[in-house]
Image (cartoon, rainbow, N blue to C red):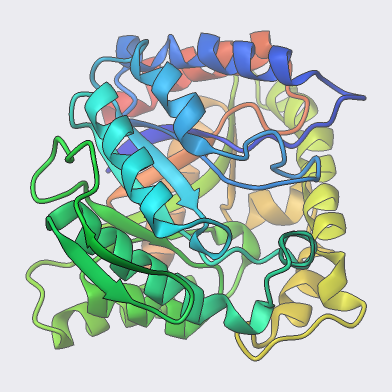
Length: 349
């Protein structure tokens, strides 16, 4: 299992400025090569403290690529619903050049109704925009002189520049929350999957569906599964819990508030059951997340036990992506946590 770090900003100007958040994030990236973390990842979201400090993953990852010389750089994930595929392909190839071919390109459908409303995009077009956009990006990266007549974007005889450093293109990942169809589609396409145990659900069944769909489509190997966890490592169990408890609780409340439209009337056939998903998340807290192994909090030995327990539940997976500075975790605590995890946990997983 490879382990990397991810940045999902969950703060607003009343908590921390954008300058301070990203400068601190770069300091954490400075520990990645020293301790052997496998990737650096960030999101694309808008307008709300939940993710809104990261409207373009490529900007931060370009800076991170100049600090870490070994880790993969992961867009986790670009949102084709809100961007032209011509723009996405060019940005991905430029980032692939800047990191010398260490890019993993992740895509997601987006799931926050307020983002769709502000961009003037219908949630009912979410899947169609995603499928069309990812396919157009794939062709623009793999081919030259590309023409495509789509429902949302069309172009003729385009050779996107720069050309990708990795050939034929960087590996693709698809983010999925709780919809079985999303896991199956990613598997059938031969892409990796990014998933979030935080949301609960039958993760083993979803990952099995991903791998089965991949095999049915004739792709070799089990694919690549990247799962995201919150992590706080400390020599003292009680201290770890004290540091992580309220930031994780605030993070969960912020997520539910950002997605609250799902429980107050928003609906779309492209998002079946999302009202129930968000309602279930509203009942989550630090203790429930730790109990279901979605949060790795404690001493190195406790975290190793947590990892073992979770892998017994869902089976092996290839990549863990750790949130190390969630909500308002102090920089010093996050750095100490990364160091201790890197010294005592990484060598054993």
